[in-house]
Structures are given as structure tokens and as C-alpha cells.
Amino acid sequence: MLSTIIENGDMTSRAHYVTGHSVPIVAHLTPDPTSIGIKAIQDLVVSLSISTSSSRVIWIEEAQTLTTEASNALLKVLEEPPSNTYIYLTCPNAEALLPTICSRCQIISLSTI
Image 1 (cartoon, rainbow, N blue to C red):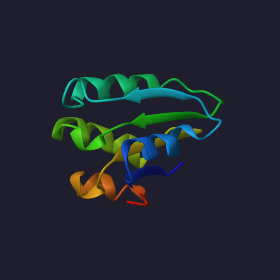
Image 2: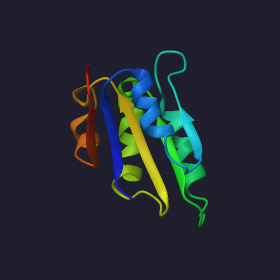
Image 3: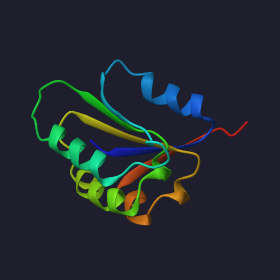
């Protein structure tokens, strides 16, 4: 599955886009308290190594808070997501993410009304 960046809009509209599916969210990463660090991504990678035939959603909220180390650790997963896994990164602006992350994802821009 292709990973997706949801940008623009407000936090509520980005959240609605991710939660508006019938697929369960099995991991929801948020800043703790101001960033998402390498440990959170390493734990995510371990949890994704468990195969499943069910579809699942991974949501990285406020992805612009990923540390550089966490962003780099996430690249392999974005490049080759596990089967039946949808990965969503939400942020106010995709330009705040590393270009290597953006290059591995499709970008959906919500309305900024």
C-alpha cells in the first residue's frame, strides 16, 4: 500500500480523513510532548513485523514533529509498507517533512478554508 501524507486543513479535518475508514487504527503516534522520537518509530517497526491478513492503519499525527533520526528510521517502512497496511502522516504542511519522506508518499492536500 502506498503511504499517504495528509496536509493543510486543520487538525480536525486531517483526523477525520484518517478515521473516516472502516479499517482499524492499530498505531497512533503523536508528539510526546513536543516531538516523535526514534524509540516510537523503532517500536512501530517491531509491531509492523507481525504479519496479519487484516487491514490496518498506522497514523503518525503531527508528522512535522518527527526528529531527524525518527524520520530516517521511518523511510524503509514508507518505501516498503507491510501488506494490508495503510500509513498516514498528517501535518499542516508537507514541506515541513524531509524530502525523502515526501518522495515515498502520495500527498493529499485538504482545503484550507
